[in-house]
Length: 485
Image (cartoon, one colour):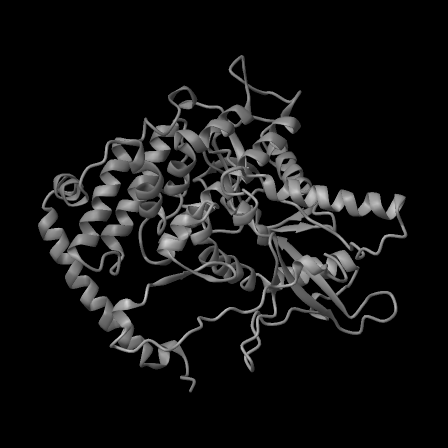
């Protein structure tokens, strides 16, 4: 983040297609052109270029995707600039729109390797300039896609050069560097380290069973409550029985996992809008059958009978209070703490800010890098603090490290995600097996979810129609409050 930007970051002139308008009489003779970053090109010219045009032809589209992503993160940009500039309120930082609507002029400038977003500081006084630049490397121009880490390398090198020149060549006219950030920087490392310490501290004392703490009328606490997983309460809030009694605890991880799968069965059975078509109902049933069949593929049988350890199953970003350096100061929402199998001790899915069923495609690589960094820090913190159980010592980090690649991470997250189970299974677990045509697989497997599957599907379709009518009735009644126009 600098106060001015250099000439190489100035954008090229806006390029528009030149020449006469295409008329029907000459349309067949006009060669189609594709947009590059600063011009248009025909296929024949692209074939003759010395650059690798397989990459060059995709830059314009990738730039649009990057700009859209940055535009969606304006609030985060405000927060980062305010933090680096020592401003108490991010609202003092204004990020202009990407394009001026009046003359359609691009405001966010881009050069060969960076996009430069101008930011304005309100009431900056004498210590801060009124205008600064927020610069971001263009990942598609510096090899980040094929060689992850290139962007971080570039930022660290440039920041170091700024510092060296300021100290050794103060007469050089360069912008003032206010701050910089990298993936997995100090703030992120502090957060990961704090989380690792919390997780390790909770697991120092193995528990005799899977369950949650409860307190009786005499003030005695005991590990005699069912596991307090928030998704079970969500199901019951929708009048769907979880099938797990309040006094139910487990001494076997398999029994616990099978009961969680049964709660997903109940969602499909009891939720009136669980399926909107025959195809949808059969696809969900197929996934549930295959989730059961693959239980032993994605869980560790050596951890079947323990160790069981306390875990905070709802340690989301919104439940963590941090200081300015991202060290954890307080954690709230402890009601969802459970004693769970060691295999369930995993990095949180929100490391990259996405939902658990949104981690796919390019987002998966970002998540994998964050996952590996978290595990590396966790392993450092675990050194010298082994987990004892039945005369053996267990490594928490070892179980954590393998979970992403062997699919256990996705399987165990699916068990606790009623709406996301099916996407997680289809995206991350099905690919472990030979590919089978979707229609054939669904037709062959779904009948084994319940006897009389055809009758069940017909019932679900009737329930869905009734559900839609009930939604209309409630929407048009006083039960949903007053209407707003």
